[in-house]
Length: 244
Image 1 (cartoon, rainbow, N blue to C red):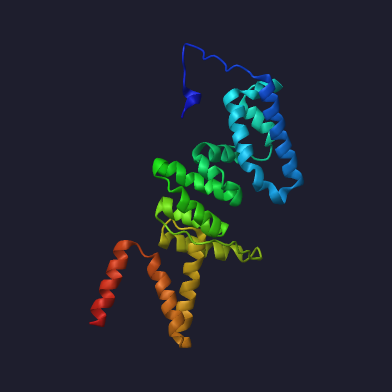
Image 2: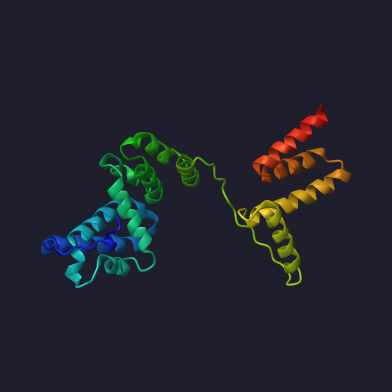
């Protein structure tokens, strides 16, 4: 880590450039990338090889064969849209054990990237068989949530973007309501939470006269989740005292 900040009086020797091997590996990379464009639907079946070859290009400095100045410049040519993809593939090759890499074509590179997070976090304690089983059996989004919960201890709900078409005259009222809700909830809450509070408040008020206790109970339950820990305890205490 931090090799870009490493300084030494002795300039390290460049690795011996094996021109024959370098030409073979560079050709393989170009073949896979070209094939990927033609067969986008089947791209996952060769991502393991691509990650391995990219790691070899970096270690052997094969990019010198094309008179480039750095490995980053090499990636910029091959991955003009997103070099992050290349680094993901290399990380998969570097952090997952060989017995797992041999099975990755069954799950695809997006799930493999999630497996890499677990392997990097747990090191020698990585339970490859268990996580590979989950990768094979769970849908992609559910598997990502499983990995996130394992790493953070928090459950993440699936999200969905909802669009509204508004008139210009409506925007100030809505923005002011969301800002007021943010002041009540705290600045760490997203605008989605703020909008939910506004809607819950409306449902609670409408249910008072409409005789819909289930809707009122649901709204109050959502309000309770927005309260900080101390206020939750105070609320429970008040309810308990009134009930007794």
